[in-house]
Length: 480
Image (cartoon, rainbow, N blue to C red; front, side, top):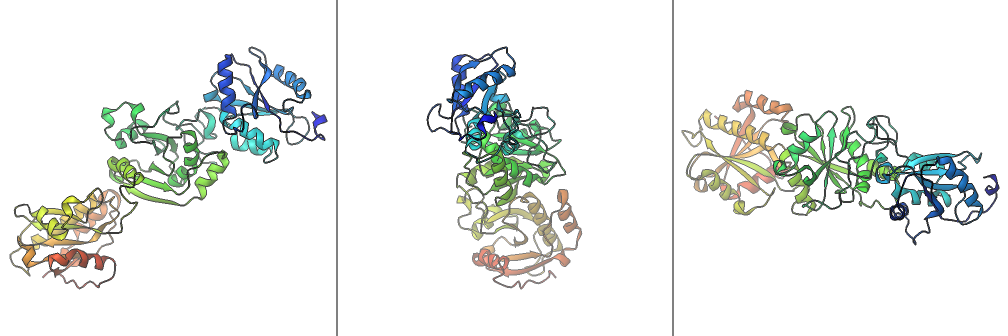
């Protein structure tokens, strides 16, 4: 190999060999995959060697043959690609150099995804990268469930990598969700990546968040586990770092949005919906570059009820709703009279019955204890208001525009004439773990936590919105 150290190098095709038993058609398919990321013209990047099959022979036989082939000047003399197993989609191919970066004629090799091999070779040939950098960025690690880079499998959306705890460029959590890269998207148009807390059962997680899971086969799910992440890591940051690589492996995976189950009790705590701000372009980007995108891109998150997370993501993806809404949503609590909850909601918001998903301005609830007088409401009425509000805060804990301090209360069956109460609770709105915050609120005397002021019902929503936005001062008084 020393003869080539001082010889100008042409950009020559890379020879492809196999020591596994492939048919001619299978080898052509493999060659096309190898140069798929660098497709200037067929066989300009990767070309089958004149003798490309060494079935049953040791790899050393390929080395010896390639040394002779390189002297002819038609193939790159330093590098070649070899398929060593029958399943190149799963196992990748072997990238071989007969002269590493030290130029001491040292032979070295590493396993790489077939689709990355041709582009990797070009980067080496033009000096855009060296052998050590390519090996660090692209090397596949055997699937032993114990760690390593996530490209050790077949480009599906659930390959197995390391658990992200070594601070290195290896990324992922452990178990993925399947062995095949999907050939088509699900009915919603894209797959939804799910990054799960290590220790949770993948099947249970998917059954909890996949719509109508009991009516589907697992292969019909739109949600796919991408990695299991260790509990001592920043799960969202780790998922962001991994996600662009997963998006390259599964072209039908939604590029910007995914879900993170970061709690052992997703029914109570919900799950995180994450938006990663990048263009989704994975073409000709190395795993290292994709990890950098995931690490440095801006992110935003919101919590979702586990059973509604897919619906929320899909409606945002299709522009049916915004990431967050600028309007406030308030609870409205009323005494019982015929259709009182519908009546109070319609009085406060004329379009209440026609609003779409997540566009609510008013969430009504009836059942308050009727007061004895207009100004000196019975203690039962205000206690009911506080109980109703605490309950609704807990139920709407994943609605990011639901106001936890302000609400409406109606103490008559004629609010259109008598007006409605604007109510403010003096608490921080922190629900705490498992609703402990609302439990603490309900332990307090309503007179110490609640103030109210009356308002014409037609003006009530805008008045409370202005108070919530700080445009108007609160003028409330304590109940007598």
